[in-house]
Image 1 (tube, rainbow, N blue to C red):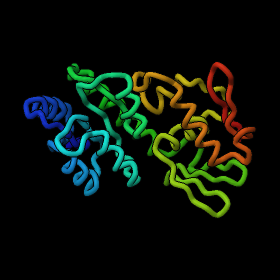
Image 2: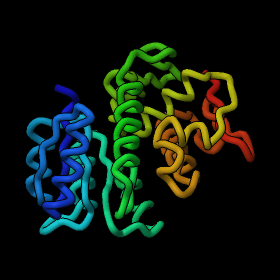
Image 3: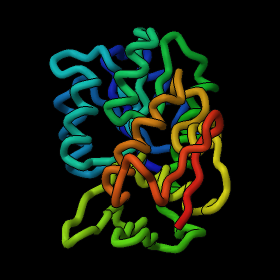
Image 4: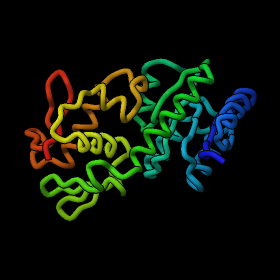
Length: 230
């Protein structure tokens, strides 16, 4: 049996079609139809991926994602919704979602996105080419536990923060474009703007840099991207 997926969709016919196609690809699929059930399943035995409809009875998909991330539950989330406006895409992914697919969609595209998310998540949990830890001055990042230790305090990093820092560390000393980071961490088509990467880097600097206004480790290369200098 393949990886276990949780499909949260209240339209029975659509849920059946999605579930059947994913099962044919070798995945084990559990289907629930509301936000409360989704939270219970994700908390009890986190699946490899949640396919999460936004328009749900009771708690909507955005709220489900927000609650899971607030609880430090970093299970990958692929939003499925008829609301395909740019603002909704930005909101869902800013809350911690991994990708966003608007209805109606081609089931072949859905399967490709599922594979891509699982592949990126596998990379994040494999041993890093940069080693298990990254030391920047008095800050120490553990890529296995997604934690940052500094000045006697430990901070839990989000999946995206860890992924960005790990990718920069694996290419230390190189200029890494925003497009490359976007593709590795989110998948290139997931976000409508690279500005989101800049916002994540601002937070990482606050956590890592002695003086975030004058970075020593994470340098901005104007018009291109970033370079990590350990």
